[in-house]
Length: 412
Image 1 (cartoon, rainbow, N blue to C red):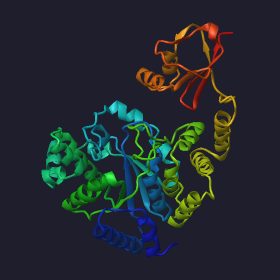
Image 2 (image 1 turned 30 degrees about the vertical axis):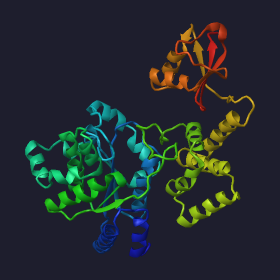
Image 3 (image 1 turned 60 degrees about the vertical axis):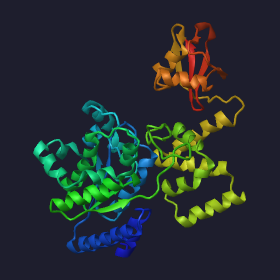
Image 4 (image 1 turned 135 degrees about the vertical axis):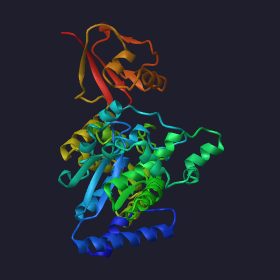
């Protein structure tokens, strides 16, 4: 078992607060908690929350999951909290406008596979899965008033995203202020020792959670705020489902492989650091070898893609994904051999085929892709939204982007 100081070094690695005094205070408090827990023979209660605003968790979410895993491996009590109630509002922390409100039915559908996705990183035998409607849905209006009395409006309005909207004359809705209050109560309800989150959660964890715990007679939790965010497939902006630059944990192996291969070369070091857990020394060496030409960026990226697919699927799946990639991008034909077939019984618009086979999310997306030459029939761009595939054109290969294919065949 590592010493207390070694545990603190490990658990605080990657944490940043924008203020060295706060970081030192959190480090000191974590050390005190670990010492007390060891003497008492009880694990620390640790959690991180994930709001099911969509059905997909993505690689960016795994950064906090890996921190939870470190606590698990040290023997602590880890909770993967699904924000079944907070997601009805939606976290406004990094948004420049109010989120759309979801229904309970939408949240329930989105949350169905969350725990299984998390178990790609977390040990299912050591993970407590909870839903925060367990305690938040039972609060009455008097409870809300009592909780709200611990905060001032100014504490919320000085937050950067709210301040920008206020200065720009953009609306800030009252219900958005409740989100930090609700997340703070998550810590109270679980009597949390440690909460983990990203930079966008700094206020919710460090201020709301700790202040509410203290106001209700609990010892304030230790906040571990991860300092870096994983950039999306654009290599620039934080990975986000809403921006479409994400790599879903549940992506098919070939799609996950292809999405990693599309990430710009400059993002390779941070992907190795945040997804593979490379040490600073290893990352610096990688940067040096890329800069000197000792390593080719494409080979580094391909190795990264194989490792990521292996983590979330299997080594066999990684082999298959690379084979498909080679067929598409290194063969002369550019079309994989093992693509699905779809029987076409009558002439049908290309847009309708794409929607029916879930190759696009909507007709609007199909039309945008067509405008960008992202839809091809037998390797020829389809740019007319009214274009159809007729029976005399079969068999034909319909392609969306670089990784989605279907072979259209006539009914036998």
